[in-house]
Image (cartoon, rainbow, N blue to C red; front, side):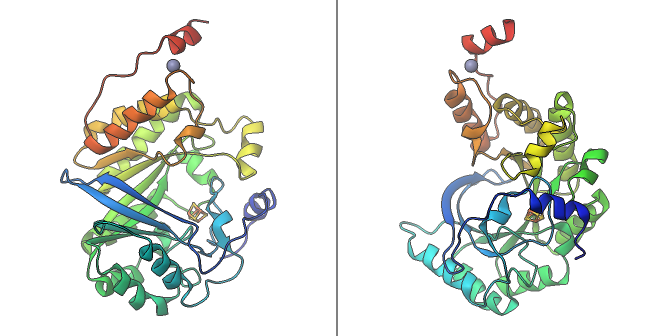
Length: 318
Ligand code: SF4
Ligand SMILES: [Zn+2]
């Protein structure tokens, strides 16, 4: 992929990468997640270390968990074996293989590792991998066949705001996402979409509305699950955009408002990503209550009354 001026600028602003070991996953988490049929699944996510993604999205902070060169053959398998060896209790139903990059990029995920990965995944009912819409194609179908399990591909749609989408440096247009979604649907592969809350170049007062519109678009494209991801700062580029008035960090209240408005989109599961939720600007008095409410809604999909908070009301009145 040609390196553009925007790629160079974004990369130059990044803080140093973390030191990662190609044979040790940088984390794993066990979570409960609702599916479109109402079942609540146990999901194991393995955060795997591999080659850096060739795309350079302005908001991305996944590169910090990547290697400078290609993923060594066998490394991802070794990482997954170690993660699975620490599992206790009943086997979760779903395994998410998150590579901080694109699963179908040969540099990040060597094809020779696929059979061993499929063997390790054989004790799970379903597997989720991540990919840019552009790297979904024949290889995706080949991996699904080899896996012999229900496959889900998580794809970043991010935002359909026309001006903002072009500014994300993701090299994505809605037509590319539509094409990938159709290919997955025709092959019986599930689609999980990632949608941003707080994308740069979307005016803050329109942020919730554009996120809801983008979630609706993903649902129209057949997404089984949509994760709403609040944009995080910290990669240098987001701080540059913030200084220019082009990025406003999303708040916890905006995340609640977005999720509340998306509940009508069932049976698609729309969930708020809560991995870094405590970093979102919020009222100290009711933050934990609001987070607990979001976690409940993620699991049930049912609307709940908004949190009443005197401290929030006082702040609004002043
Ligand atoms: S495609 Fe995904 S991993 Fe690659 S730069 Fe964009 S957000 Fe990051
Ligand atoms: Zn409050």
